Every structure is written in C-alpha cells, then in structure tokens.
Length: 241
Ligand SMILES: [Zn+2]
Image 1 (cartoon, rainbow, N blue to C red):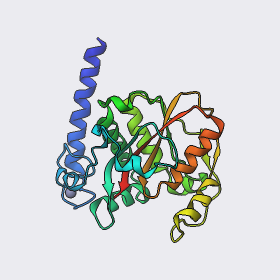
Image 2: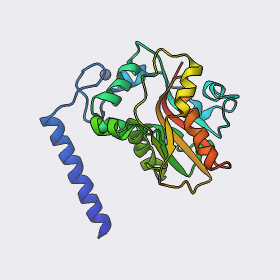
Image 3: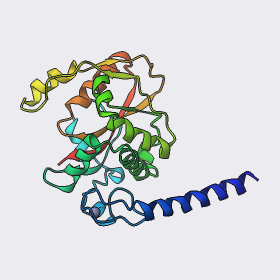
C-alpha cells in the first residue's frame, strides 16, 4: 500500500512539475535560454562549459592538496569546478551568493555529492560543517551559500550537517587588497567554536569557492585546538585555478 501511495505521489509530482514548467518556463542563469523541463537553473550547454577538476578520481596529490601543503594536515580534499575570473563560473558563484537562489545552492550541493558518492576516498567522512557567515549577514542575505551546498551534499551522502559547531565573529573588514599573510592573521580571528560539540572522528568543511585557502586554514586550526585528533577534509564547489 505504501509503495502504491509513493508511486501515485511521485506521478502527481511529475505531473505538477510539468504543468508548472508550462506556466512558468525558467531560463538558464547563464545564457538566459529557456530550460527544458529536465534541466534545472543552468542549461546542459552551460554546464558543459564549466571546467571540472575530477579531483575525486585523483590517486596522487591534486592542486588543491598542494595549496595546503605545509599549512595544515587534511585528510581529503575535493572541488567540483575550477574557478576563473571572467568565465561563466564567476557569474554562477555570484548568483549563488547574492541572488537569493537557495534552490540553486542545494542543487549544486547535490551535484557535488553525486560526484564523490562512489569515490572511496570520501567514504569515511561522518559529518559536514559549512563555512559560517556572520549571523547579521545571514539575516540580510537570507541564507548562507555554504550551508546550502552542505544541505545538498548531505541529502546525497546521507550525512549530518553541523550548523553550530563553528561560528563567525563580527563582520571583518573586506579581505580584498591585503596580502596573504595579513589575510591569514585576520582570518585566524574570524571564527569561534559554537555550541554544538563535534563528536565525530572525521568531518568535512564545506565552502563555495577556495582562493587562498586562508579562511579554511583558520577554521581548521580552530577545530584542531579543541579536537586535536579530528580528521578534517575540505569539500568545495570551486577552487581558483
Ligand atoms: Zn545556458
């Protein structure tokens, strides 16, 4: 009976989805072409233009591993796409951050989850911690893009998301225009431990885009001060090339 009900519900869902698409055709975020009812947010053509890293199938060290060499010990790293300025990925990340596109964030998170689902490297991750933004910023923006990515990944990988393990302190000055070392100093004071204790052996920090990695370094070091044996991995939507 339950199975029949599920089948009927999914049939109705599909019917409604098709009907909704007919009434409100959605357009591609990138090229503004109308999307087919099987595409979400971005058309297949534009997805194809993004540059995949394929880090999930690397056996040796990836560019991402190398970025953190000598800075902090990471168990596994992953980024779905390379980030380059003036390329479609820049607009996509901008939309994710500022255009109130919560479903888009979750969709990207699901795409990240599917990319690593069958890779043995990531099987031991037990929980996800999104890079937090300050509460005030979250209130104004309505969401935290890293949290959305984590939610999407969590759905596919069936992992818990720890929202209050690390908190962002008051708004810092803009990070742009400072050199890497100044940024590091600044970043190390950006976070504090939140009220949720981390009772896992291996967690992954989830971020939208990694450039210098200083924010992640600060966050990981903070977690290590409290949990010296915690294994930390990094999962990001994009990484600067
Ligand atoms: Zn497109």
